[in-house]
Length: 81
Image (cartoon, rainbow, N blue to C red; front, top):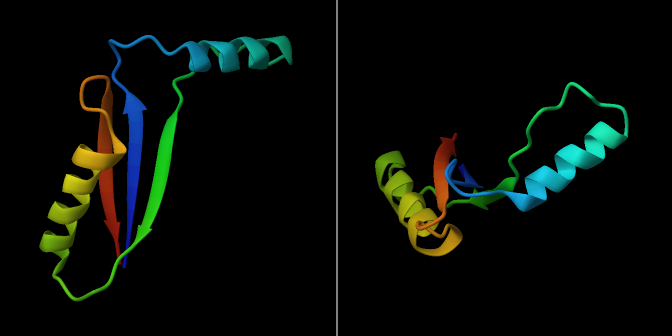
């Protein structure tokens, strides 16, 4: 079983790296790109010793406590079979 965790800056937080990426894309001729928000992606392999609900709770805790800074970032967890 695998889990995917997506971490990104909250919408209220400025994203200078995203702005730089947008500017670079515009400079390369991709004028339709109006905004870019960058983030982090984690893929975690899990043992199947626990049930899906327990695994999801554990990965959510990992995301909240370790992978994301809850002051400026938000996260989303997906559990895959």
